[in-house]
Length: 278
Image (cartoon, rainbow, N blue to C red):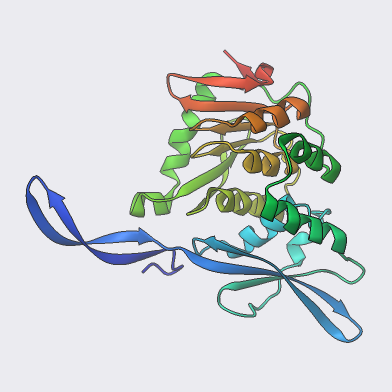
């Protein structure tokens, strides 16, 4: 096992051209993480469990902060870097401590769990919920990215995927600047977790909103990924795989550029194509 517990050795029987070989494989780890929020008060500290997610261990703090922000449970990114509890309550628990005077809308918390469990009533309601929650305004005319630079981003992301090279079995999300410089990359067995982790890294660096950034995801671009990118103020979302119809409806309404099937030889630009040149 690596030092972060992100992968584990596992004995396998390899079948190779009629031969059976006993060998060891590196398997990506998947374990639960509980995310808690805490409110200091006159009687001590009130602790609320918010969510339990199955994730790949590593960058758990980024995951917790990214999740709370992209799900709208934290509105102001300015104080979030100092919000992490210095000590973990348990090995697979992260606690985010709200400053004095900061609270949370308990009704919003209830609505959040309802929407998560029911997946919304319909696509229109899901999009309206994103606009009610709010997101940073996107620049209308920038950034403009040359397609050759955009097409090279998957290669740059793969080169930075430490765990993928070791295990071959997990998702990645990366954030680049307009010049194609890799700012952060995060990997996880869950594609939504990878997005929360990379946005959490930007939060901890004080870089939200990411008004001139590009997010690249290794799989498809579903609605929840687009919603999280929009919440971070990211104007360009690119995916190795396909976007969904609801992703495109949200992106069209918000003015976000969505690129799918990104390959060196070409791609599909579904919304706001003016941000991709050439």
